[in-house]
Amino acid sequence: MPVEYWLIFILIVMIIASIAALEMKDILSSIVAIGVVGLGVSLSFLFLQAPDLAIVQFLFEIFALIILVKAFLGKDYHIEEPSRINKILAGVTVITLAAIFIFSVSVFELLPPFGEPLMTTSQYYLENGAKDTGAANLVSSIILDYRAYDTLGEITVLFTAILGAFTILRIKSKSKKDKTELSHAAK
Amino acid sequence: MQQNDGMTLIVKTVTRISVWMILLYGIYIIFHGHLSPGGGFAGGVIIALALLNVLLAFGRKFTSEWLNISFLHDLESASATLFLVIGILGISLGGAFLANFMNKGELFALLSAGTILTLNIFIGIKVGMSLFLVVWVLAGSKIVKGE
Amino acid sequence: MIVYLLCFLLLLVGLYGVLTKRDLIKIILSIGILGYAVNLLLILFAYRKDSVYPILAKGKEVAQMVDPLPQALVLTSIVIELGTTAMLVALAIKLFEKYQTFDISQIRRLKG
Image (tube, rainbow over all chains, first blue to last red; front, side):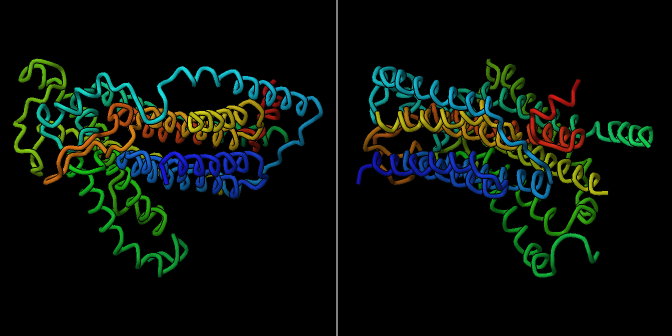
């Protein structure tokens, strides 16, 4: 069976799972459905001959699941039922997205067909990667030698994101004090 | 041992054995990043998951005694800085920023590929520590709110 | 071709979630779906028929390999996504502490 059929099957499962994740009421079910989507992506990476990415995606999935469950489970809150105008707006959005999808078909026809990439720069990497860098894993030789700038930027972005999360969560004591003061004032 | 901290005795016993295996696997993935699938990113996430395993099984109090959290902060910042230091050394020794100036060694040997192995190790430490610390802060915020 | 279109459909599903959902958790999940779709689309462009993964092995003759460049780019993108998700979760927790809800319409109403 060619790779393409497997990919079509996995993609259909992923689309169904993502729609289910968005439409389900229960948060735990949504998070599990997102897990299905992520593992489908990981499986597709394996079919597309990218074992590096499959490992990272799989671990990403586990990690995201832990973060989401730990942060959101057991929080009691109420979402208002969508009013009529919201439903109309959602319908308009769906119609617009469907139109975008139909018009984009001709754009995808312009791209090189599936299975035949252009490979202009990559051919050089494939031929000279092992000789230039001494690494057997050519993906590794690209991210850390040919394009190490990218990795430096990636580290910077990660550092900033983590720093942002820290800063946001550290403001707690002050806002909590405000809240207690407010509740005292209300009493 | 605290009674109401963390999970049950079975989970704790299994965790006590499994954490070291997961850590070893993460280190293996990092060190073989230039030979086989994996590398600094995957290995770093595995190390973060191993530490997270301890946090989930044993609870926050035990983990803060077992690990020195401020040292993890230092390790995270230091690895990012060392990445830059390697890059600047590349200017003086190799002629370009982040140039591969070390001895490339033999193909398929463990100690080869020059700076790639070094940078992989730094990235692994950086990714692992920062991801663990994020979950540490997230979990901490939850406990404070429950009071 | 049909694979590209299905992957694009997945991206549009994520976009639909971001545009119409009012639950903050659902919005975070939709952003996750968007990220998955974009990463997968890039790797789909890199695939070459009848070729192997771009890793040399001892004793194996060099065969035709897939394009390694998009793989390297997506590898960094996945880790950045993880950091972004963590930051979004932190923001959502902060909002929940202040307003006791994840409904963005209520959060907007409480502001003024």
